[in-house]
Amino acid sequence: MAQVELIMPKMGESIMEATILRWAKNVGDSVEADETILEIATDKVDTEVPSPTSGVIAQILFKENDVVPVGKVIAVIATEAGAAVPLASPSVAEAAPASNGVPSNGAQPVMEPATPQSVPQPALSTAGRAGDSGRFYSPLVRNIAQKERISTQELEQLPGSGQQGRVTKKDILTYIEQRGQTPAVQAPAPPAVAPAPQPAVSVSGGTEIIEMDRMRKLIADHMVMSKHTAPHVTSFVEVDVTELVNWRERVKKTFETRYGEKITFTPIFIEAVCRALRDFPMVNISVDGTKLIVKKDINIGMAAALPSGNLIVPVIKNADLLSLPGLTKAVNDLATRARNNQLKPDEISGGTFTLTNVGTFGNVMGTPIINQPQVAILATGAIRKKPAVVETPYGDLIAVRQMMFLSLSYDHRVVDGALGGSFLRRVGDYLEQFDGKRSL
Image (cartoon, rainbow, N blue to C red):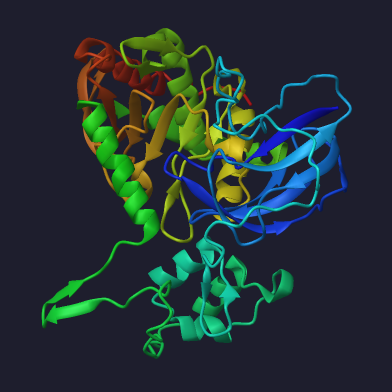
């Protein structure tokens, strides 16, 4: 009987651990492929982890509320297949096996358990618990509470709609909305409770010291690592997207009626990026030491803002194979589920190129930091009406046009100015050459 290891999935480039919220299955239960086995939480998302195969739960290695590092084996599934080598969960890419017979994740080969329900001592079993009651709060809820300056005492009073009265994201956001502008009374935290976030300390009348939360520390580390790893260069082009803007304005109602989706500019930008990546495949790569890994698939990550204020980058796999309606559906679906914390682990990994729309915030351009291990990231600025020179058969004219800036940050170790600049110009050309008579 084969053994399949269920591994704690990676929920983003900067996420190194996750909290187990609930086991949907127990030892001895049957499970089907893609059936939910457990729910996990990070500072960014709460999500369900599906089973990679059909079988029977042979071992559960961690308890609810345990904090588990990414890549750690959390359960074992016994299957009827004849293979003897344990398999990894599809949520995390499996590394090559070590030559000594030990799985590459560091775990020992899984044997038939003598006592199926044997559970090791949980790691950090008190993580996420606060207040005298020892009530559990997921990392996402704690992150929102810290950003909104909600004290432990306030959390203790919140009614929870989750399992066993757990406070969910919906519960705390509803409370924040109802609380409105009325400042909450900050009662002093009991000194014996170490995990409770410490209030900011004012050292003078005009100065305040605020400790970074865990997610901000991880983001900071990831950004510093990216700048330390890759010498960044940023190029800019300004493009005339008047035809594109007019086309979208003309067809958006018909598009929504026909496909049931609202078309934004993002899928059109992604379409242009995919075409340019096919023209310049050496931008669709990653670096491993002195080796260049050229990606045959074009997987576009798009930065999406979360209600907590953090950013997450869901990935559209094989984006170059999708039509414009298909890209629109994928963009809208991922953006909606990102805001509702419903993304699956494999939907925020595997990106080969990233797009960030700084125009959403009214910015005309930006210098984004590369999302490692990719080698380039494109920022799209706000579209604004500006006077511009238009060439006509009768001479040059000055007209009001819809203009925008594109900026590309790229890794100068492997993408030089000629390649980066040419790729960026090609994206701009595809946007400028958009067919204003394009049919749906």
